[in-house]
Image 1: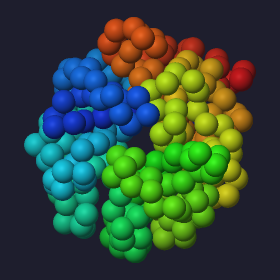
Image 2: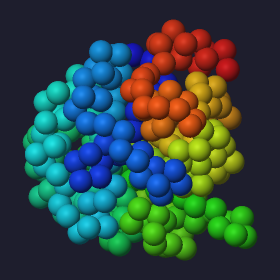
Image 3: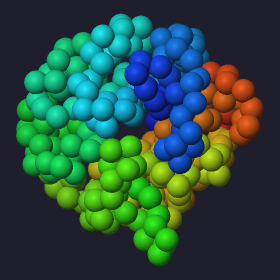
Image 4: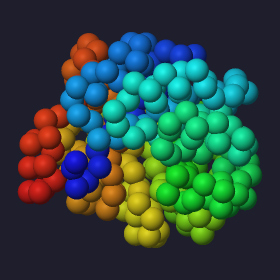
Length: 255
């Protein structure tokens, strides 16, 4: 296992595997189970699975798909999307998922994170924070697939959920999602310097060096990526892939 965790982040939309650009232009990229089997073969250490339409469509999590994913995956999986109560979390953990990521409902009911951490332990609870830079250059926390502005500052927001018991934070840059332009290093630094829990970088990775920068310059504890691990490159076709372990280790060691 790599010292720094690097993981694919797969997006579900009605059971299909998709990829977005800046949370829009959703494009079908394949069957999630087929993708997982490829990642199994590439000995990926961890994986994030997010249902990006469950909350907006007021749906429960897709338990049948989650069960299939958990049974097929050789690696630990974090799931997020459509979770609004402890009972659904219990069911998802019972299916074999290791961690659960809460996004929109954390903004609606911040105390839910306290309840979740108390019930399952902080190590099982991730708060996922989607961040967009507005026209004035200010970062703001967005929910419901980037459609609702909470007006929260991401640093204060992350600190609040650290105090509520979250075990990890995902910082996802909407501006950089699917662009291959690299992670938002300044955004990452502002959050990682303000909290003591692990922060996972997401949004914008275009190459292994971007992962190295997220860790070395942004202070991230781990890096997740979507487009980098499902496309051959920007503007190119679908190719489920993952860097060679030696390439990642060398970059993280020498970066």
